Image (cartoon, rainbow, N blue to C red):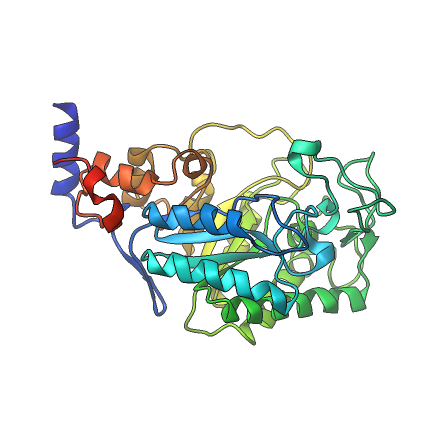
Length: 371
């Protein structure tokens, strides 16, 4: 009876924005508000996608998500977190990625990719092999780069502080990666500017000790991100969505703050960024107050600037996800671990919320729940 009442309530308010309402961004329409969050698989060789990535990403498209985003995909070899990361730093990477985007599109979903550079958190072993940094003089290791020669951990090898030539290379790498992203058939680019990777390292005062135009003030520390956006804009069509993932706070005194994220969101909106994916942490070792939906408050705060936002972080239940949209805390819900556990979470959530009209793959229709 409780379930019936819940369904009645949701149907009564069906004209409100909800988890299964459409969302149009520029020329792109998202069939619902569920996004598959980038989740590293550490299963690539020399940056190439393979059948694991096809099945992993394709199954989430089959499962009903509106947008399926690849894992963080490196714009350069030195920008990989590990030797098992996907890459988009050479044209040969395009072929398999195009096969994957074609399959995602066949399932009625959109394909996104998260362009990334790991910065000082590069050159690490695979998680199931310990996740430790691999020294640059060892097999599968390389020298990492960062805004300043400050390692992520004191026990790790210090990165090389980027000079002006190095910064120009980073921007050129993002631009070239965006052009390959277009050729591979992706609908959405998300710039990875979170979790302690290179762009986050620049805007956080905890890792950026520079005294030039890329360090010091808020305006200087966000400069690289803004210049990367400009570089991507030269090749990425203005009609296609551009997202940015940020860490909304460093969770540490003296670090990047939620208030600075709000100010950044205003600037990103003016730069033509369509949505901010609001994550947090990752630049230094810090305690994070984990609880269901613990980062939703950041998405809600940034949304008040007028930019679209995505909520992420321990979102595991259908009603929880739907409430975020209904309460206007975010415009999209970006789900990670729950979609690892259940690739068909969107189909299940639609049933639990009473939206049984969601389209199922014809091959699976005989398994639909009965009304």
